[in-house]
Length: 338
Image (cartoon, rainbow, N blue to C red):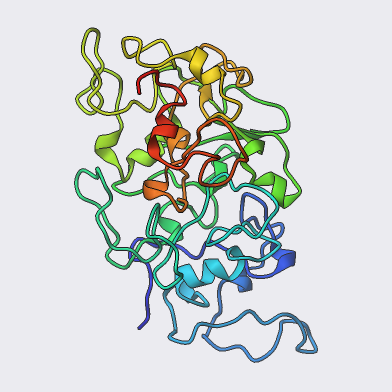
């Protein structure tokens, strides 16, 4: 079957050979078109004059739309599943770091069906109107394969219109590397080496707008009803009224919720979940630290239900949390009840 992504409007996400590694972006300076595309679904030798050179693998059930070499997920995973030159996004971690986004799962891999499931056709929780990819969830549902970077700094090639989408220019999760820029959504301390680049302790989250979160806005593309302004119908939390869903912006720890959360409790943890900060101060946490999607969930997922991070505050940090083994460990990061 010639599987392709119905939402795939241009070509593929991933590179296929080490020398084509392009960092956050699949850029023209380091990416070879033929790593992902083939003109006639046929290739018997390389592109050098003598016929030598790397010949990337072709899928067996092509030809494929957009001149791709393989089905979209299989093509992406050619590089992004256990290879040393590109981020590993599927299955057990093969690097000496804790991945910021965790791991995707996929039917047939033996991984627990938590987080985001490649090839899955389930309706996205909270989507309104209901959203799913009838061809199966794929990498380009969240990432733009050629990079969406009108300002040159779109974090991890995240799309501007995921899921049900947003009017152009949509939402962009921006980032800065090396020196923090409080107007950027993400602060990436070091650009490399690769294990460091994608490690959770190399990534921090700013809060350019104290009343909003670009990260949460991105997630809203699929999980519509889970996100909204404080006081709005999705979240609640207007003055004197309790929240109806957990806020992902505009709710500093200890400053909202009628005493249900405590900045002191959060600060007292040795291991802390990640939060946003308008001032760029996370350790010890400033009074402006605000939870968002990444505080409780791994973006790709992990082996806990819903990709939740069971972070009790002590022990060795893993992609599942630390010594915590259940959801109350996560809640106890900020909350005083229980």
